[in-house]
Length: 111
Image 1 (spheres, helix red, strand yellow):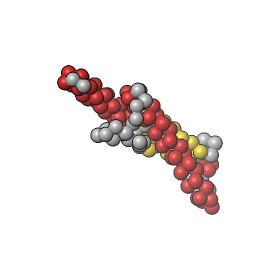
Image 2 (cartoon, rainbow, N blue to C red; image 1 turned 120 degrees about the vertical axis):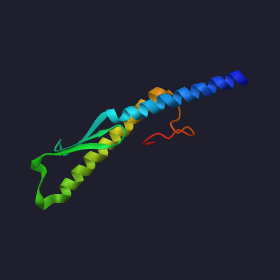
Image 3 (cartoon, rainbow, N blue to C red; image 1 turned 180 degrees about the horizontal axis):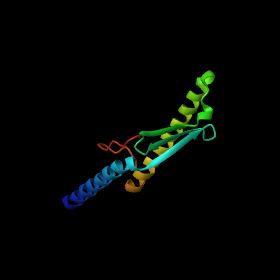
Image 4 (tube, helix red, strand yellow; image 1 turned 135 degrees about the vertical axis):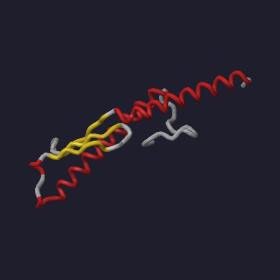
C-alpha cells in the first residue's frame, strides 16, 4: 500500500472512531424499557446501560411474598438491560457498517 493510501485509511479510521465516540455519548439519551409481571414492574434504562427508573405497582407489593417482588424486579431490570445492549449495538453498527465491534483500541460499552 502506498503512503497516500495508508494516510487515507488512517484518516478514515480516525473519523470512524470520532463518530463512534459521538454515538457512545448519545447513548445516555436513548431510553429503553423492560417490564415483568404483566407491567406490574417497569424499568427504564438508557442505551448506555444505566438504570434510570423503577416503577412498582402497589398491588404487587406483598410483605409475605418479597421473593416474588424481587424476581419481578430482577426480570424487568434484565429485560431493560438487554434492550439497552441491543439498541447500543444497533447504534454502533450504524457507524461501523456492521464491522466487528471489538476493533483494537476501541472499547464499546456492553460488547
